[in-house]
Image (cartoon, rainbow, N blue to C red; front, side):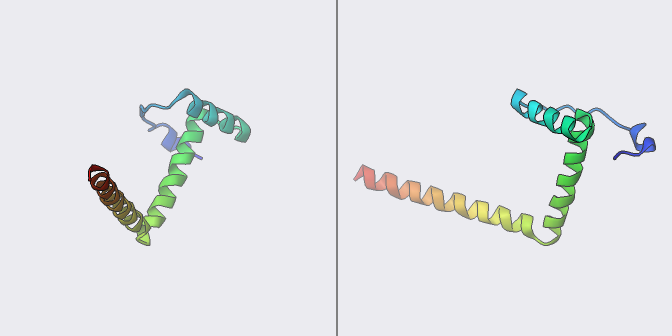
Length: 87
């Protein structure tokens, strides 16, 4: 929950969401008795805390490395398949 002193310093941040994403947020916010704004703020804070923990243990870097390797392998396979088709 945002402290009163922090609420006085809140700034607007603009980003885009699809109508279905907004609907999901609104339903969740209503379920927990919160505003849309507070719900999004809480979700972002929790997500950042989790990401910081992952980063601390090197899991973010590991995930990026795995993603890059998979992309590299996918490109290699696609090229091999293209070359076979061209034969």
